[in-house]
Every structure is written in C-alpha cells, then in structure tokens.
Amino acid sequence: MTTAQMQLGMSERTTLALGTALAGHGAGRPFARWRAALLFAGPAVVASIAYVDPGNFATNLQAGARYGYSLLWVVLAANVIAMLFQALSAKLGIVTNRNLAEISRAHFPAPVVYAMWGVSEIAAMATDLAEFLGGAIGLSLLLHVSLIIGMAMTGAVTYAILAAGKQGFRPLELIIGALIGTVALAYVVELLLVDVNWSEAAYGALVPQLQGPGALSLAAGVIGATVMPHAIYLHSGLTQHRAPARNDAARQTLLRFSNREVIAALSVAGLVNMAMVIMASGAFHAGHADIAEIETAYRSLTPLLGAGAAAVFLVALLASGISSSVVGTMAGQMVMQGFVGFHIPVGVRRLLTMAPAFVIAALGVRATDALLYSQVALSFALPVPMIALVIVTSRRDIMGRFANSRRMTAIATAATIVILAVNVVLLLQSFGLMAQV
Image (cartoon, rainbow, N blue to C red; front, side, top):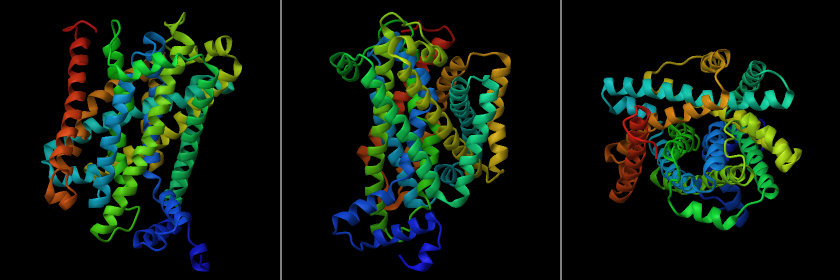
C-alpha cells in the first residue's frame, strides 16, 4: 500500500481495492479471491440485520411458545423469498447505479410515486417502532431503568453509530457486521442451553402446517417481520455507488459476488430466526405457552434455563435493536430522498421516527404488542416494493441484458402473490369476515 493510499479513509481504500479486484489483478491466487470476497461483502450483511430485528424476537417468541416447531416452515419460506428479493434489489443498484425509490420516481406516474412514498414512509415508521422499542427494552432490562429512559439511551447510541456513516460506508458495514455476529453467536449459545427435539424441529421446518386458531395471523406477522420493505429499498442503495463497475463484465463480477453474499448473509439471518423459534419452543411451549412478551420471556428464562441464558437473550436483543434501528434510519432517509428528492438531517430523521415509540410508551401500550402490530403493518406494506422491484428488474430499457429472465420473473411474481394472499386473509380476519385459522 502506498503512502497516498494510507492517507485515505477506510471506505476510499476499499473502493480502490474493489476497482483492482474488478480489473482481475491477482484473481488467480487463492488469497486474492478470499480478500476480494471480503471486500465485496457488506451490503447484504447490512440489509440482513433487518431480518433479525426485535420484531423477529416478538413474533418468533410467540410462534415457538404457542405452536412449538410447527411454524418453522414459515420462517424458512419467508427467508427464501427474502433472498430472492434482496438479490434483485442488489442487482438493480449494481446495474443502474440508482436505488429502487429513484428508479420508481423516474419510471412510474407521479400519483403512483406519491402513493408508494406514503406507504413506504408508514412502513419505515412501523419498522423503526419495532427496532427502536427492541433496543429500549434491552437497555431497560439490562440497566434496570424505565422504558422511557431506555428509549432515550437507545436514541443516543444509534445516533452515535449513524455518525460513523459520515466517514464512509465501510466503518458502518463493520459495526453492523459485528452486531449481527453478536446476535448469531448469542443464539448458538441459547441452542446449547435449551433442550431441543431436533426431529420435530426438522419436521416443522419442512412440512407446512397451521395448528390452532391464530396460527395464520401469527404466520403473517412472521412474514412481515422477516421480509422487510425497507430492506428491499435499502439494498439497492447500498450497492448503487459502492464499487466502480465501468462495463458489463465488471457488473457481472459484482453480481456474482453479490449473489453469494446474499445467500451467505441471509442464510445466517434465517438460521438465527429459526433458532429463535426453536429456543422459544424448547423453553416455553411445554408449560409456558402463554408467554407473549419479551420482558416476561427474559424473566422466565432464569428459572427455566439459568441466568446465563437470560443474559445471552438480553445481549442479542440489545445488539439487534441498536443495529436495526440504525439501518432503519438509513433506509428511511433513502426512501424520502429517492421518491421526492427531499433530504433532512439524519438527527432530525432520528427524532421523527422515535416519536411514535415515545407516544406508545406514554399511552401505556405493551411494548411487545406494539412490536407485533408493527410487523402485521409491515406485511401489508411489503407488496409495494416487491411489485415495483419485479416490474423494474424485468424491463430491458432499465436493466439492459441484466433484465430478469421469464423464469425469474415468474418466480418473483409467484412469491409476491403468496405475500398478497396472506395479507388478504389477514385483512379478512381483522374485520371479522373470516374465522382465524
């Protein structure tokens, strides 16, 4: 590394190294291939934190406690759908150098764009509600302070991490990567502490089933907590300017690394989600199926599995809440700027998105209930970016030779229809027009 390169920031050095890797220098050496893979890693890791946020804790906790292992197949299916759409989102940013919100603004009619923006802002608020409350719950339990004080502390911590983004993309990627690694490691420990029936868990993961009233509603919440609207917008923005792809050959290389990273990062996130359900099933389903709140689960883990299990659960929740709140704020900024070209300081955005959480806390609404309601709201907003992404990535005038094949378009359309169908059933249940299944 030259003296001039050493004087550059971490993100600038990463961009230079990415350019060298794209040019193929040293590509034949094993070390160079591994180094290139690490250089290209980042966007999917950041996006994947949306798939292990506190909303996942709330829905997966209830899924495991109430229905044992029987809803694991929902988690698995939702994660596969998430991989597909995150890969498409990353491809959009790499090929067009624009994110989904910007592309939508350029190619859809104005009324559609404003409607999409409105729905996306509501989704961003619901997302931040879940993530912000999760971090606040973790801090309040850890430090034995009120939820309001925990919320204020969470806001301060997330703003400090967001400030690292002023130094470029790489420091933020490394911070988020470390936090998601903490969550994953915590659930490895949890699975070692809880008694798991692995044959039943495998059956629950592979065989679709809905056992008992309310299972479908909770399944919709699981989907809403797993496949996240803001992550679909965000991923395209994280890849749009990250690496200097000057021709189709370089874009093809970027897509290859991107797809590998999506599979790896979201596989980890999916396994963490499944571990959440398995842990809740092993700890609570037999004798404590009524446990529905994160706080109650935390306090119940000590007599059931020991203080160590409770502490690990709390560490995971705290890392999840803080990191996902950071990512949610980033996504909200990207959505607003992309759809309407309007930018506000990140501190102001942080304050605005914190406001609903403070209102809910002041009204005395149970935090876990608020988390679950937010996930159901997200499942209704989810089809908007999904439909838009399928449309734009299938258009040759936008994507050129990287446009989706007919098979890929058919698969993505089918996945979107599944999400729409689940939402229709949930809507009918909410208005009493259909019995809960």
